[in-house]
Length: 139
Image 1 (cartoon, rainbow, N blue to C red):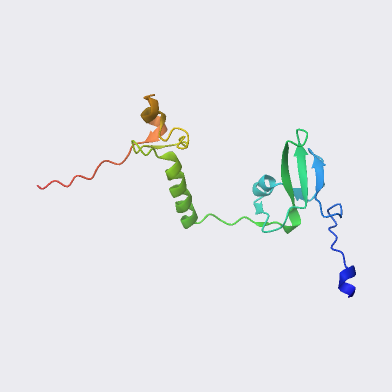
Image 2: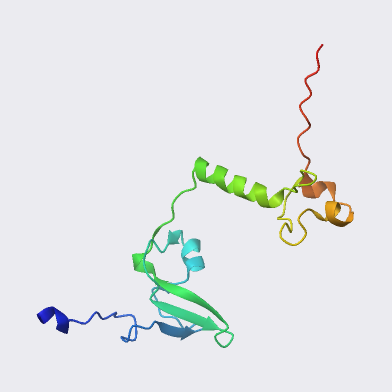
């Protein structure tokens, strides 16, 4: 019955279960956003956010994590790189002409690249030409 009297208290939070909210550039030391952690070569590593930082009157915000609980970033492996390239190829390749662009094309709105959609000429430096068809002619 003594366990019912125990209360879980977060030393970094206000104590009522909600997260502390900081204004822009007023977060305490030892706290960082995901982007700041990434710049330090770290990741949250499963740790829950301990606070929130807001700017523009609360319209923009980000979670804050404790730096001492962060773990090192995982290195990029060849398998991860291949999977990322495959995913990006899907977003960068036009289904109509087969060109792979160096930027993501608007597949949801247009369904193809601009050249296929309305005839706007594409800069040859902005895409990779589709592979030539494999002709197997008898000699």
